[in-house]
Image (cartoon, rainbow, N blue to C red; front, side):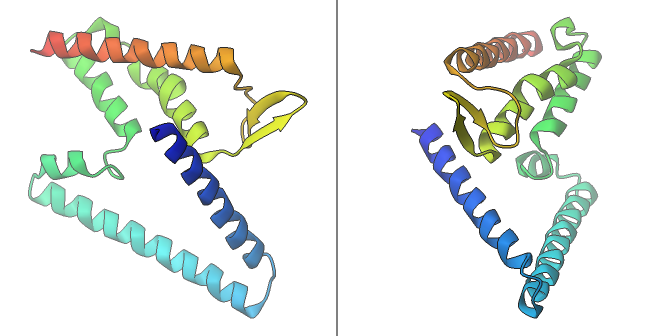
Length: 159
């Protein structure tokens, strides 16, 4: 069920991007105003996140930072696990950041933000050259299960 919701959400994200992009490309005074508004909104969002980070840091609020999924992103979590592996000498976490980024985060981002395209009987995701057929999806699922097993192993070593 979660996958269906994510797929539909991705479709809506694509549609909203297409609409916005098309409007901006009109080159009108109104589209220029919207482009300016987007720049201002993104800057405001970044400033807010920067202020949030400074507050977490000033208060040493690591719990707040860990809960902030925009700041403590999947990539930052992978780097933290890699560092834990070095500090606690957990060999299974060697090269964790690179491997996890390639095998999990990038794949997740492709699935979360790409549009499914069927051409010549093959399914790919727009923005990706990789083919995602049944066998590839099984391979991805097995990789995810290996990471789940790895996380259980690491938890055991840290307890």
